[in-house]
Image (cartoon, rainbow, N blue to C red; front, side, top):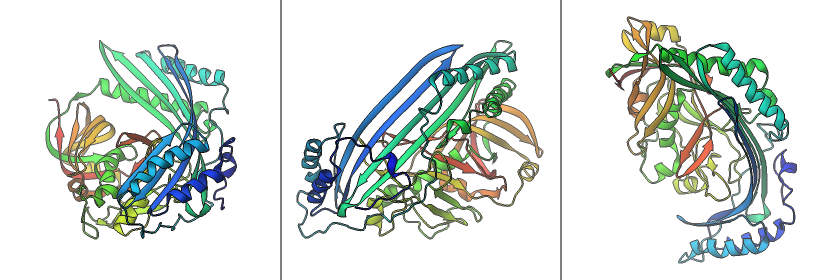
Length: 479
């Protein structure tokens, strides 16, 4: 039996659960299958909400269990249980092995287990225990008081913190065992500002696989509150957004959510294996403007989407997806890699032991270029400068997207003009990437707040980009 990572000691406390016996059941069940594993998890989480001047809710959750998966060709047998016992493993195996029904007995197990890595991209601290409960309440109360003291127009403040820790163990063929321990924190504030009967709300947050002490210094949380107030005040002065086709300048950082949704999902292996992505069949072809390089990197230090290993035991990596406009890679779990003749990239992720792994993004971003944001603005006759985004939708099959701008400004004669409200960006991902003509040198990650949904599973992710100019996007406005 091999142990893998510097965080092993945080994942071995499974009580009386018989890992050796579970491994034996797995080995027997994998005969005649292509792949499979037992994914064991223990998770604890805590969430506090301070709203309207008082602690409105406080919750704590703890869960543990395992998922048992057998993969035979394209058929997957999966069973899960919250009971950590050998009896439960036997019952799960009886259900999971149905995937092998009708499969030729001469099919041999893929024994190419994930490579080993001793890299650790985040520390094994305990975010639930490192701050006393009273200190967490005091922090949220201080954020509320600071916001109200900062601006007389503040009418409502909602401050929240969420944290979790997950210990996982993955049993694979040949007695292989993989461990990881994953902390995660997020601090968020939402502020409503009122003036002359008009009210606007804005939010700001931050977090990652970091310690609370990394983000709870007063100057750090105060900057979050200041930013939320600034955005709300900007929107109080906003005019109705125009509609029509125009050039768009995207700010750095969080606007990468458009990249994540409109391009990133289309580069996940399962959609391309099934031929349902707008990028299917385009490997080696020009799918974006020259200079556009997009990567998915699960190894970014302390980032929200980073993992030491994915949920199949594969070490995460920096995977180049589009290089200088050419499609060069997809994000793969073990299944999509095997079926497409590729190598697993460490993107097999699942929400919990009760879910199956899928190809999913970690931290997805565009590499910086050499252009200046000021030059993008100055060289745009008429357009829109989009700084922050809210929700959006995308159709994976054709890449068509609709995104709502929460902070945007008119560009008139090469200068930033009035803020606008109600602007939406409409287009399709591949076309938008081909219309990029300036790439900034001001790359930023988002502050650590991204959550991605796919197939009913939600996972933490990282997002980033430099400023960009995209020619000829459609803007849906309100004027």
